[in-house]
Length: 88
Image 1 (cartoon, rainbow, N blue to C red):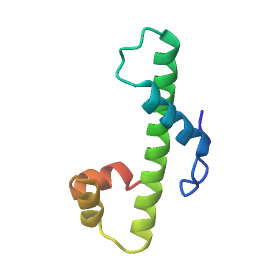
Image 2: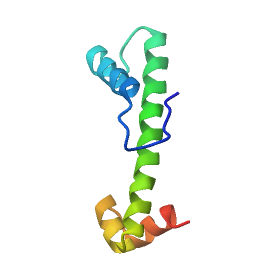
Image 3: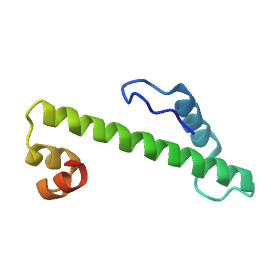
Image 4: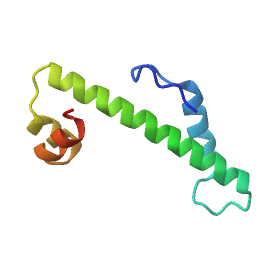
């Protein structure tokens, strides 16, 4: 599992995994079950790190005085949806 303490730091392990997926393909057609397991774990790591980084950016945007409308627009959603998801 990927260490996601600081979203600003580049996670080289994750980048290597992403490059491996691009090289080997990730369309679900591999006959190797281990490839599917590796792909799912890597995609889960990517999603987890993206969610953590996204939440950190939203917190920073709010701390800098941006509105929920601004954040919703940046996320491609409504003000209400952004606030419900990140406004804890």
